[in-house]
Image 1 (tube, helix red, strand yellow):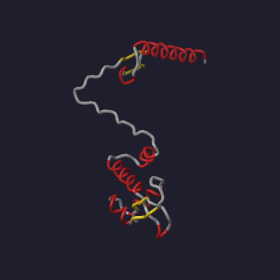
Image 2: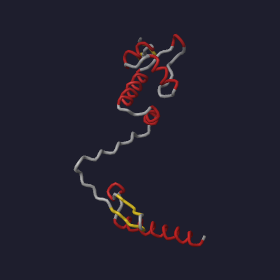
Image 3: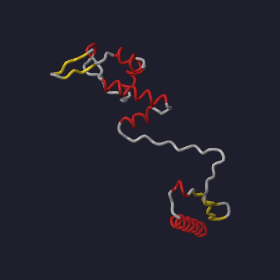
Image 4: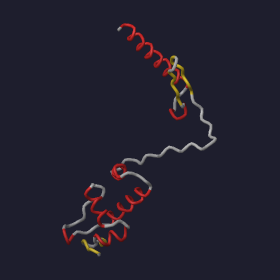
Length: 144
């Protein structure tokens, strides 16, 4: 269907056309509207029609759901929140350096400096703070 608004031509779609173009069943389109993932159609009842922006959104939702992303996360992405970059899986044989800071017998703090983006000075400060916190906890136990 083509609508004319002044000198501007706007293509619109019925629910059946939108469903066919997007590959989403009509029931799914209605569900996405109900859940707030897709804007309501223009007009009401039999006069309701969908715009190209509805089709774009449906295609984006379909792409994200096929990638295994939850509808809740899709809602966040559609509202403008940047998509999270999934961590790169570790390959077999990859070498990863970690710092092990022994706090007390049986207590060890393990840090991946690269992943934490921590400098050596920051790691030393963290170690001092954790050691001090452990000593405070032990002193509190002796006071009780």
